Amino acid sequence: MFDVVAANFDPITCRAQFPIFANHPDLVYLDNAATTQKPRMVLDAERYYYEHQNANVHRGAHRLAVAATDAFEEARATIANFINAQSADEIIFTRGTTEAINLIANTYGQNLQAGDEIIVSTLEHHANIVPWQMLAQRSGAQIRQLHLTAAGEVDLNQLEELLLNNKAKLLAISHASNAIGSIQNIKKICDLSHKYYCHVLVDGAQAIAHLQVDVQDLDCDFYVFSAHKAYGPTGIGAAFIRAAILEDLPPWQGGGEMIDRVSFSGTTYAPAPQRLEAGTPAISQAVGFAAAVNWLSQQDRSAIWAYESALHQQLEHGLRQIEQVNIHGQAKSKVSLSSMTFNGAHHYDVAQFLDERGIAVRTGHHCAQPLIHQLGLTGTLRVSLALYNTTDDVQRFLSALSETLEILR
Amino acid sequence: MTTVTTDNRFDHPFGCEIDLEQLTELLDASASWESKNRLLVQLSKQLPDWQSHFKIPTLKVAGCESQVWLDVKPSDSGWRLAADSDSRIVKGLLALVLCAFNQKNNQEIDAFDFEDWLNQRGMQRFLSASRGNGLRAITQEIKRKTQP
Image (cartoon, rainbow over all chains, first blue to last red):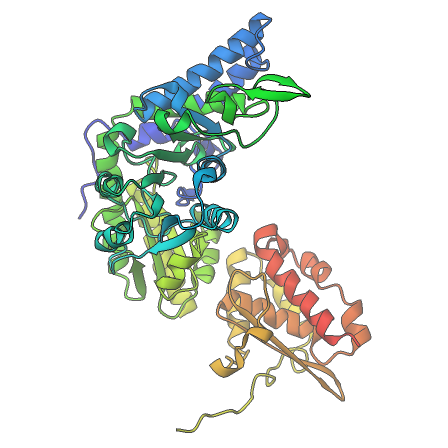
């Protein structure tokens, strides 16, 4: 039996703050690694912004423009504070994790040349592979693959071997895997990489909703994440870039907001972060993003971690009771997601039957094809839990799964 | 070691013993989505599993969430079609596709609007953006392969 109770956290009160569950009372939403649902506070914050403050930012000739600019820059400070960046200027707003990685590949990446190396782990989502391949093509740098142990963690011995020649300028690694949930020891990885003067970019997309992230403690150079996977709006994310690196980064998109002075004889650029944020930004989304992290900060994060871990244990324990289930990814530390395949049933078919019972799960390669291929699979069914999921959700999933596997037998 | 190379891929009832009218009745009688899915699983069991050596890249249809293989060959009575998938539900959908196109000639294949037929059965969700692209790719591939 599992005692899925955490002091200082009540999932039922928490769940009541998410309007989607009032509109879909029977929904069992287990696709949180793809996107989370949004609490009312986030929806209200965006609405309040449009109803009270809407104007363009950084052009403050009137009171609304000042209010909008203040709201936008306060959001930046909130995000900085949330991940313990030293200064709000270290936060660049982007459309999401993918754009944040592309931004870094297109700016920091301009320093790379033939002979340099970029280390990319097998765990990575396509967004943390493809921009580096594109950079390698442009610069002549070489991609080195960092392999996984059988449990699904990166191989630190191999990492050191890759670093020994001092050619690696950047290591791209996810804090938590979207496909199998493994959490990497980022602090240790950063220590090791910095010994060889290799910068570290951490893809925090799957970690940010579950772990308390402190970029100064992790000592990473870049940390990127999306709002929508942490109870915030879609279409916005952030790149933390360490100040010392940020100062020298060239612009990557030209337009309004990022300039100092423009003339046909030449243009000079604004300092960062504005230099890297051309055009009108996603202002209301930034406000919603800040509301989401404020909401999350008001919760007892360690109690949430304890609750999600207990729920995840209940899930994996239940899965192990069903003979046909294979769970992929056995890392010692995992975020609350499980990736699985079934003997005698295709994951896609299982998901279709679950959907008929209002249970939302993900199937496919999860945009992490190298990892899925290394596991010898074509795809998996992924169940990913969030703080508003309950033991009842897990139980309903497990029962529906058993019945579905019977039908498909 | 000898490899068995019998080709039973084309030995299925869809488009010959089972025609589209019969399937239309069966689908229309399945009220809930679960019963529609169950029907697709049942139909899939009447479609032979391809031996692995037939599952070659040139017979694979791109754009499906699960894996799909499709082969066509001409005969006196029209084009003969065979298909397989690693997903039972997709294989059931393939049975519907075969019912519509197997043993038909070029003109009949070109003229039949499979999506419209599926829509009339209330099966739009199999044509939705994430799921439908695969099914659309299969019907397009059939039309492409059977045109002169």
